[in-house]
Image (cartoon, rainbow, N blue to C red; front, side, top):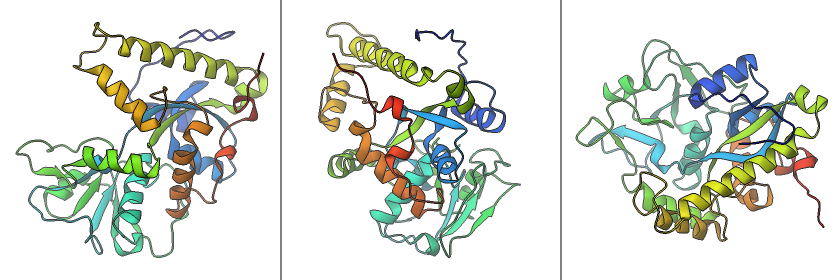
Length: 305
C-alpha cells in the first residue's frame, strides 16, 4: 500500500500482540486497534490516539458464545449463569453481551462474570471500566476459561477465538450452532454489521503532520477497492476459496450497495451508533459517545471538483 508523503514500515502481527504492544507502549505511529478500547479511551477524555473510519475486521458475534457440549444451556435462560470473558472491554464481548441483552433479555447483573485468558491463564483487563450497578467481575489468574468451562465451573464463555476443545465431537460447542442463519437475519433486521477493529494514528503524529489521516484514508480506500476487484473478477480465482464472487455479492446485498465493505462514517452510522450505545450501557465507555466524537473533521469531509 502506497501512502502519499509517507514511507511505510509494516509489521504483520496477531491482533492480540498488536493491541497489547500498542496500547501499553505505543511502539509505532499507526495501528489497528480494538474498537471497544478506542471507545473506552475516547469516553474517558483520552485524545492521544486519532481514529480513521477504516474498519479492518468485521465479524458477527452469535458465533462467539460457547458452552459445554450437551450442557443444555439456553440463550433465553441465562439468569444466574456463570459467564467467562477474555476482557470486558473486548469488542467481540461487547457485541455478544448486547445480543444476550437485547435479543434474549439477559440483565447483566443477573449473571456471574469471570475474566481471564481463554486458553492460557493470566490475561488481564486493559481498559478502565465504569460497570453498571450490580455487575461484578471476578478476575481468574490461575486457570483458563476453557478449563473452567470443561470442568463445569463456567456455563458460557464469550471469546473472539474458538476455545481449545471446540470442534466436531469435542467438549466445547457453540450456543448457536446455526449462527450464520441468525447473523444474516440480525444484520438485515438491525442494519448492524459488527465492526471489530479500526485504524488509529498517534495524536502527536497528527499534530506534526495534520495531512497524514486523510492520506492514509485514501490509501486504505484504494487498497480495499483493488482487493475487492480482484476477488470479484469472474473466471479467475484470487483466493483459495470456491465461489468468492457469490460471497462478495452477498456482502453487497447486506450493505445495500455496491461497496461490500464500506469505510467512512455515514455508510456505517447504524453500526457505529449502536456499538457506542452498547459500550456505554455495559460500562466500557464512561459516557455515551456520538459517532462524530471518534474521528477528526479532516476525514469526515472531502473536496469536490
